[in-house]
View 1 (cartoon, rainbow, N blue to C red):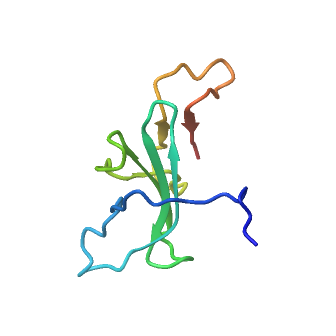
View 2 (view 1 turned 90 degrees about the horizontal axis):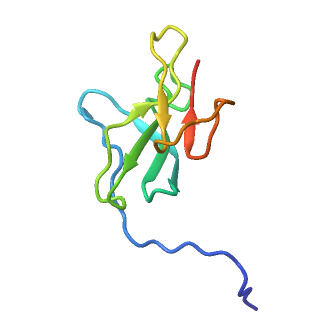
Length: 111
């Protein structure tokens, strides 16, 4: 018996969002890929990278595509170690975040 109301996923294309820039020097693995389609049509991808799941270099990253996933922006670190000097604020679109600091389409991250 098949369930006609069950959700399904259809793969329409594949591609690479992140590629280890120097695989001959350092092993980097990626985990937990997530892609979201934003209201403005852009794709926002989040994923984790590191030498190991509990390694000191394990970080979460974002990348965006404005052409339906054909090309992707350079990756940006989402969360940094407390010793890092800068924070990332990654806007999903250009809307005013509003007086409460939130707002539709915005992702605000800080240490």
